[in-house]
Image (tube, rainbow over all chains, first blue to last red; front, side, top):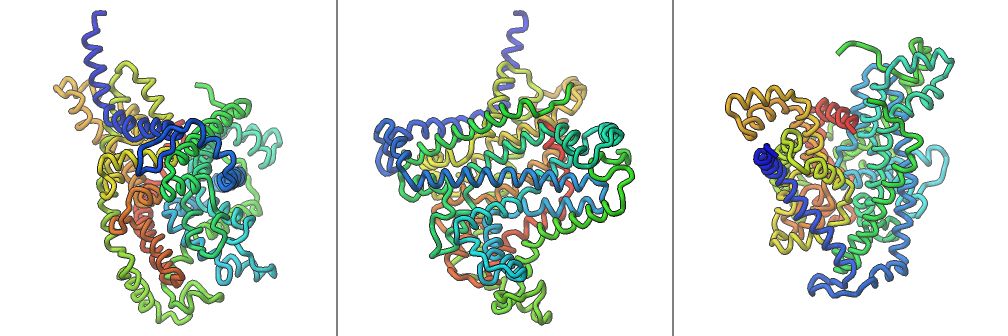
Length: 298
Length: 296
């Protein structure tokens, strides 16, 4: 090869330029991931070195009721929150395409909550959900309904957390709106000529045209929902006397095992299961979406 | 840009007045619902303790003349709390945010340049790995990462929270690479003729032309650092190293039944800078997001 020395120079330059990422990837991602894989087969109480115990951690997980409940709760949360967030975001984005005045204001209003730190968000909702004096119960009782124990009872806790997750859909709304604005207008004109009403235009034109963006956002939401932690953590700490496990999710269990009980091996087994679940869910989402997602040619 | 009408399935060219009223009514209700929690936070923070906790309260205190005095006493009470030192948390947060934002923006730009402009062997595969790393949830690696930082002797300092930012972030690399690829290659060639190497091209051509994208990266990373809860919770064992997001939780937990007006004043202090940043740079946030979201 005549150019081999210049290609070597190019290779060297390229790897040099990406070396910050490469070093960070190896040190702070690949290494911990490998360590976590190794730890998951050990008993590792942090103060002593890891002791090989084979599959014992994984076997123990199958009989850990608290963990299984946390995993089931996380699955329930994801299956409620992801569709709810996606539907509401699509509805709001659609409304914003209707040539409204003050579109910027509406976008800003919906987007703003996504910037609020989660611990502050938890404090605000702690107050809004307060049983005696919270605003939500004031509305509920004004409507003549009995007070709701939002953060106390299992079923209501889940509803409360889904409401909090809906408050954070602003980024999705902006992205969906931008995608909807890219849909060629002649498609809507053709649909209108065919006598389609707004709902059918949405189902037959908008949804297929923005389906790749929806797919991407559903994957992002899934990865987020599987690791939900901060809001339940802060709310649990803030309601002493309540059931300490009514907001106990997958990552809550991992956090406790790793950093409260110093069972790093056990926590690592949980971590690897979480990782595999994320990979599996992402893969399945892509697989199932094949028939529905419409990628534009070109 | 032209003033072409945006496509919409909702209201066609001849949208009826009733449809428009419905659209506006729904949008106003939605905007109110999204803003209300923040309004209520601020509103509670400027009432006295009794009125804040009353069921029949309004946005402003019933005696509006007490408002300045309430603000002063609530916020100074929180700021000067002897057990939970917000001034120190603010300092820590700013140190971490400054070091992280500079490191993240610069390192991501350098890496993005490598991917956008240097045709080295293994580039496509490596870039796919960069994208794939976005799928790894942080909790999966948080335990061993703690062990890594402990072995590096970083636990007990702020380093775990800002040093990794100097090794680029996958999403930012992805976004900046897209942006750099949109800059005409002819500019690089011109710089080369003028005797610039990669570094000169990067520094004199690419970076100055990429200011809008760099600002988006910097702003979003600032917000990310300001808001992060889990990493500080794990990596900062000492209270005098806490960040604001973490300090707020400590304040709530320590004060036990913290009066609502004080808890909301503390929350407003933590949220406030983010709100101000958003109001001053609204277009950057929303524009940056709308642009990114479509590049997949």
